[in-house]
Length: 356
Image (cartoon, rainbow, N blue to C red; front, side):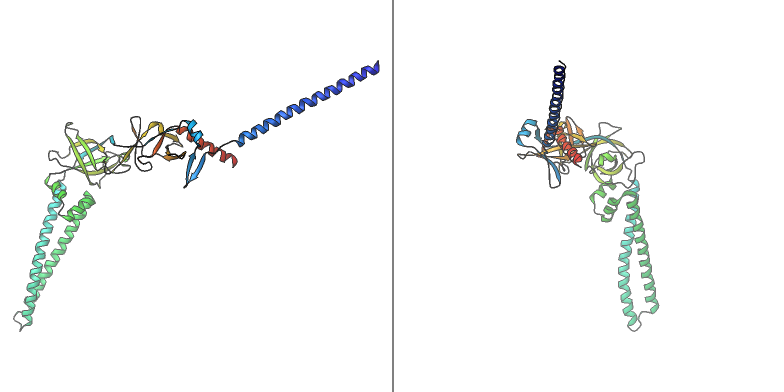
């Protein structure tokens, strides 16, 4: 009886041991399979990025591109009016007129003395010939004429210095452009300014308003007479800083003699179609990364997408205005799916960082 009980206990013990081993083997196999699945999942990663000509591109297979629902549209040119306000003031050109008067007096005197010098020099030659011919003319007469000529030359040198001083004053107080037209003396614009036919208006722009190019043509309105609007044409940079406003000042010409000295203006710049070309970027196309705005362009029938930076954005209805440059009219810009493309790029970067 005791032998049977012992045999049953032994059999039960063996069964328990076998059961334990089965559990261990099954669980171990499951863990192994899980590890295999994890390895397979990592190896399935697909890198859609590629580099061409130093640019990182995203190249999607046709099936992936179709399923991603990426949409794009053609960039078109657009007109643009910068409605940001700037200020200006009509300049009193009386100091400039005074400088012009002084310069004319100096030039007239110099011209007259130059004519006299030429005549006296010719006369001296005749005196010298007569002096050498049997002393018909005394040495004293020849000497006096030589002293007279040296005096004329000395006066001409003084006038040259006076002219140089006036010209330097014009350059320092009014700028290089005025120095140029005063030297030319044939400039119609100088005649228009001096006569009052063209009014000189000094306009001050903020740094943002002239970040790229000085506007060649602007529309200004009189603050005193809000119905008085004028077209102003860029003339030159101003050498003076407007201490009342931050920015840089420029001279513009307005062909209207009704404008008063000191009259104040406000206005907005107009981009000239011949000088600048602008593009409209839909707001859905703009993505922000690292604090900067970007957009993707698509190369047709290639599955390729290129990310480019957007600079000089100007807000408009339902989008942004940029100057043509990095983006060209006719480029295909992504309007839907830009965030998806950016995610693919980040996935590529994260994978490379993990491998490092």
